[in-house]
Image 1 (cartoon, chains in turn cyan, orange):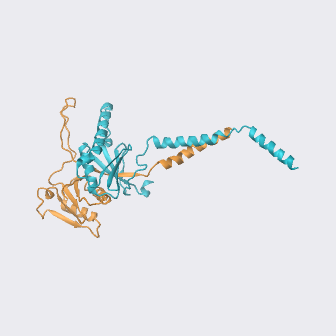
Image 2: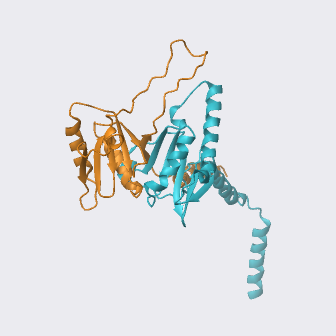
Length: 173
Length: 158
């Protein structure tokens, strides 16, 4: 009796193994497809604010324009870190007194302005908001930390800038 | 099999929306400011004849100026905080209450001081120790009323 039952179980198992499973690639296909979708959302038109280290002020303010040069400023262990929208990171001491310490930052701004001017000259079209800087400033910073940044913005011949704030939840809807 | 394919096709946009909600950050706004520039029109023969840059606003001796310290607001004309700095009669003070800047009182008294005169631009000179959240809110408050449209941050005084 037991031998017959085990034989039947073995036959059923052999039948299941020998039968092709037509559905088996689909879990992998679904997972792969969802990863593609997630990567597409993250890579194309990536929002520079994703993973921003700056803890910004929550305050209702004007609508943020598109296309500006976005820079996050945050303090870490006595240094100010500037994270740009294209994921470049520059840093200097908090109590900086020598403008030369911000040379890399100033050169980055000049490089962005030069590329912008070249592109707009070729296309014969200008968007005013592109030649402006949006500063996402961490709440732990004071004006003395931002002053050298403003000097660097002036050295890069940029006259329009703004401080970014996070909209309160009621206004964000 | 067709049911499975249709189910996957129906699931894909749903999961796409869910994943998109993970990738989207919150809503953001800006508090704008400006750096004043010198008018230096370029000599370009390709420009239209008669074309010349015109300033949209100009900083003059009478431009309203607000100095923000950790103790008080001071306001007056730009001249009062530069060439005429030693004169105590052309500057006004509004002390902070319990450490909080009295922005509404500042705007009210500036309105009374300016009278019929108007200016789109206000120069704000903050002390270095002013936290940025306070400064950003003061800048937004100065622009919120009908008095000023543009804020110029300055330094070198404190």
